[in-house]
Image (cartoon, rainbow, N blue to C red; front, side, top):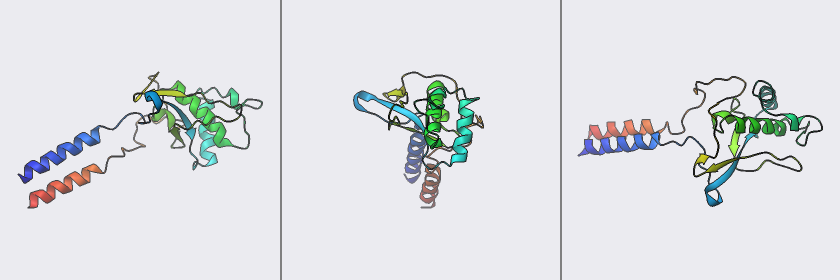
Amino acid sequence: MEIDLALFLLIALIICSAAEPQHPSIKGQGGATELWCVAKNNADDASLQSALDWACGAGGSDCSPIQPSGACYDASSVQTMASFAFNDYFLKHGMTDDSCFFQNSAAITSLNPSYGNCRFPSSSLRNGNFSSQSTSVGLGPSEDLSGSGRKSGRIWVWPIAIGLMLRLRQH
């Protein structure tokens, strides 16, 4: 009986840990939500500038709105200008967690970063899926496509499962 319980718990934990969504689970009215990729508040300016340079260069972002005289140009805020470039890259390259990573300087949000005359285009998430997706993926300046830089948030289930099995086996 104790072994059956341990096996059941192990199977349940495996199923729960495997069910991690690929996209943020943000839902709005009518099942659709607009999403943007923006620079993180705690990212340092040097990292943001490096990622911004990459996004506007090799990354292919349309950075004309953040050039002098552009609607989103703000020389006093690298974070604001990086957010615009990151968001453009995100929209063009698959709207995934990986296309909004930029060496951990960016994050996906449902809060509209637009201000004044500066309008950030958005993606649409409907019923857990983005409305239009591309197969291209990019992480930013390093282009490390291995995925090894980020770990699953549910890695903690394994020590618990193993501990439960060992404890039940001892009784």
